[in-house]
Amino acid sequence: MSRPKGSKNKAKTATTTTDFSAQIAEKQSAKEAVTAEIASITTNIDALKADLKAKKVELKSIDKEIVKIEAKKIKAEAKAAEFAKKAEAEDILKKLLASGMSADEILAKLK
Image (cartoon, rainbow, N blue to C red):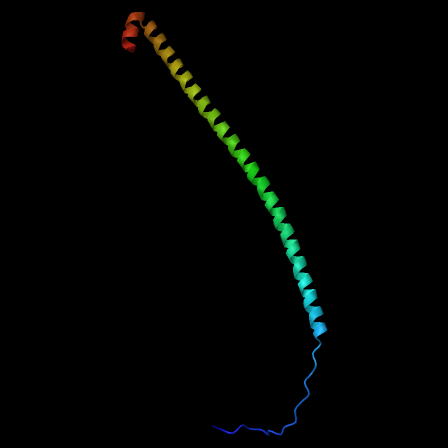
């Protein structure tokens, strides 16, 4: 093992005293700042949660309205299709009557 360099009789330096109260005060102020930030963020989160809840309710009501409108659209399309079929049948009936067919012959053709 090698011998340590330097003298063992070296003069020892005085240990510096640290100011613990200043460090505590600094850490306390940092703690207060972080606590204030947390409170601010929590307030923002609560506000955003409230907005989110309101938007979800609005979305749900819009979805219900869409479903109602789609049902009305389907009804209207079915009614229009039925009306078109009825008009077409009446046109065919008029043509057949105009061509001189009797009502009994027309009924026989429809069956």
